[in-house]
Length: 385
Ligand SMILES: Cc1cc2nc3c(=O)[nH]c(=O)nc-3n(C[C@H](O)[C@H](O)[C@H](O)COP(=O)(O)OP(=O)(O)OC[C@H]3O[C@@H](n4cnc5c(N)ncnc54)[C@H](O)[C@@H]3O)c2cc1C
Image (cartoon, rainbow, N blue to C red; front, side, top):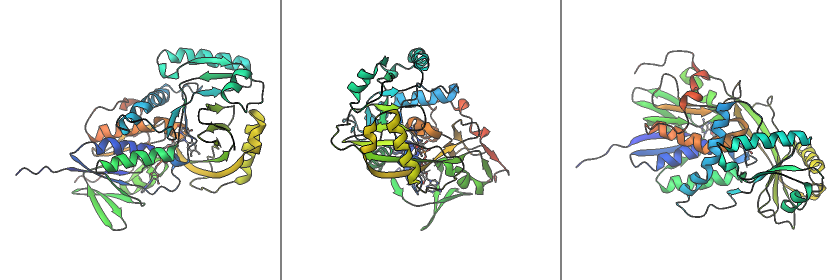
């Protein structure tokens, strides 16, 4: 009788990148998949949830390509995960985006940028400058008198729910999840993931460990240019408002306003480069964010009740560019990191690319544009087993 030997694959990290990689790997019956996740400080479950990359003034074309394609991929990814069933609106919904600028000329310039970009990114949808009364039709609590740029393709996603949904589908396909912090080493037989119950051997490993990648690759003699950035935000409840279809609101500054369902609204997030992996909540700073958001958008926000505070860790590189690919010197070890403040947007596509590499397929994003060797450098030759 012919017995097929399945390829043993580990995914370390179950944020948006890891679960997306795991989902695609779990569909391949020749793979025996185990996912490891610690979860503390995870960026994905802390994220604000904005999927609207097209109106950024950042000039990095390769980054833009990644996030534009990432945003376009979301509906297809989730339809795939849902097997054609309706995507739960509490997880992901295209509600549009309202972008504000302090100066009307900047808004006109942004409209020009958006119209040019729409030629290659039809998913931006309708673009137009809305006068304040039209902004109020979309978000009745708006009390200011500035116009906004409307992009109908913008979406919001609940990172925590997204991860849960995708993990559930991966486990239906046979993947197992181990919820603990692990370390990695290499032996003659393959890669060894060290768990609290002993070592486990794998043929191939995906490191979707964001800001924790240096810690995982250090023992294998690599220096990694990726570091933590702390982000904090606050969730408030606007009692009595149906916020289900309100768009994502992006005033200038850090205080974005992301309405979810049934009056739940996120305000944030901070970008703190000097805090390392510290997750402490600074309530005063977050209360100030509510006041600033209220001053820019609507005093009603000041009357909202505070539901919760969240903090999480983003990963960023020294030039703020993301990377992914095979770890230099290894053919069966793959990693991604440095997705920064738009990693929720790029995550499903980057995860799919990592899965494609494991399955020896050509990744949907060009590897050469996100060169891992620029950020992951060997300090010693790997052993030649
Ligand atoms: C406050 C905040 C707001 C944000 N808002 C947005 C937004 O609106 N839009 C957007 O596009 N992006 C946003 N981001 C960025 C986005 O959330 C991240 O870039 C993205 O989630 C990164 O995904 P990831 O899968 O690479 O990493 P993560 O989601 O951080 O997941 C990595 C996982 O690996 C696990 N791990 C690491 N090492 C180990 C180990 N040794 N053993 C076991 N497990 C391990 C960690 O515990 C973690 O669970 C935000 C981030 C923050 C913090």
